[in-house]
Amino acid sequence: MAKVNIRNEIRFILNGQDVVLSSVAPDETLLDWLRLNRSLRGTKEGCAEGDCGACTVLVGKLAAGGLVYESVNACIRFLGSLDGTHVVTVEHLHGAPGHLHPVQQAMVDFHGSQCGFCTPGFIMSLYGLWMKSPDPSDAAIEKALQGNLCRCTGYEAIMRAARAISSYGKVAKDPLAIERKTITARLKAMHDGARVEIGAGKKRLIVPADADDFAAVLDKEPGATVVAGSTDVGLWVTKHMRDISPVVFIGALDGLCGISEDKGVITIGAGVTYTEAFSKLSSRIPALGALVDRIGGEQVRNMGTIGGNIANGSPIGDTPPPLIALGATLTLRKGEKRRTILLEKFFIAYGKQDRQPGEFVEAVHVPIPAATTKFAVHKITKRRDEDITAALGAFFLTLARDGTVSDVRIAYGGMAATPKRASAVEGALLGKPWTEQTVEAAMAEYVRDFTPLTDMRASAEYRALAARNLLLRFFAETSGTGAPVQVTRHEAA
Figure 1 (cartoon, rainbow, N blue to C red):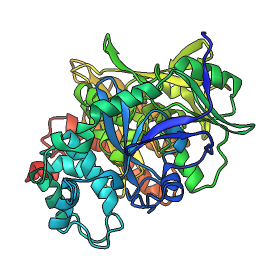
Figure 2: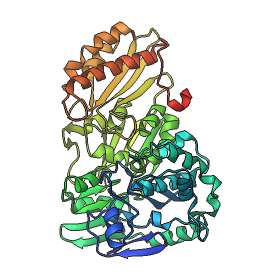
Figure 3: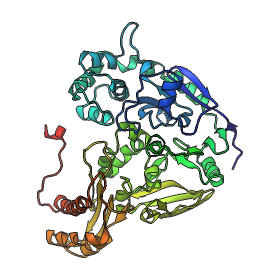
Figure 4: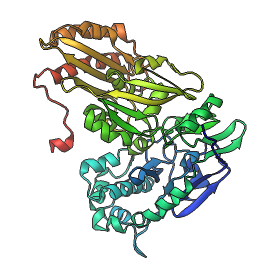
């Protein structure tokens, strides 16, 4: 491996100003830095866990399509992860001299603000949406605002404001559009191919130059905390006050952010965010696209990665069960050595994965199901959007010509200490006719596969009943019985 230059500072653009920082704590959040160091207090702390959206800012990053701006949660976004980006806060918005920005004016005129605490976050989320889609549908507006909570307005006034933004101005005349070429050039100049190292001893942060450099760094620092999107690690700091030093930030690393398809298999790099994966997954495996839409809010999907969701091994992670049901494999890397294993074999016990010191998840490989295969994912939560899973079931089914089950894989999250297949249930279905009688008999086998726990999200009894009923639902959806399918309120209208 070629020698990598080392830089002892992070560089990014804040609104219109270049920022160079040589003193950054590994666990310092963007929200704290904005408010305490730059007195930019339009960005608020509400929940400190990426749930309410009051801290929303935009982060622009260089991508294959050019400069892309996305809404993110500043409360759980670490300052060290911002090297080579453009951070935009609500203070940067402005219209013509003496006038508000179109998003702000629409919110004023349509009474989209009452107490005002959450308003800057809504403004920034709508700003990000407006730049991508000047005339969005109601469904697109609601998706963009999934991660923004308001206790005052009831949202309808905000929806009216969102529909009206383009009547106040054109995207082409927005400052971020006018400055796009200039900002792009400035960001490219910041990308010098160097590794960033700040701090000494344990209190260090490292931003590797690329995936190869990351492999070398982790080989020497196997105990470091690896942070991709920080949608989970951020809460370790803000809620649990954990010391995560030293930290290696791997978001947007070259070599980890690719998504491709070859011979019926989609390969997703460990640094690919939910947002970046959505287009490919929704077009090739629609059930996964629908699931991604329910993972966190837009800000979380813009930060969180599928690789991180797998690597942290949470029993309620949303992506492992469907990927297990699809027969996905995982590439693990340590230094220059790689090995590939079945994803389901990666999860050993609670908090324990098949990963050696210095080894990391490099990519996940997802087979695209055949057209004749039936595949579905169902997520159970207390509220539909932006909520943590109580139980999630994923179902993969292939029927023989005579209507019997020739292949079946069923996996659950929230039902055991790890994401886990329902092996006994699968055994009760395999080779049997795909009938309600067969399914009801198989439902009795769930007690052999799972002993769920009771917690704040659901009781053990509820989880057990829901898991059985999800199989019955999958049968109803795939058996031609004419059972009603889930319909969104936009489709119903």
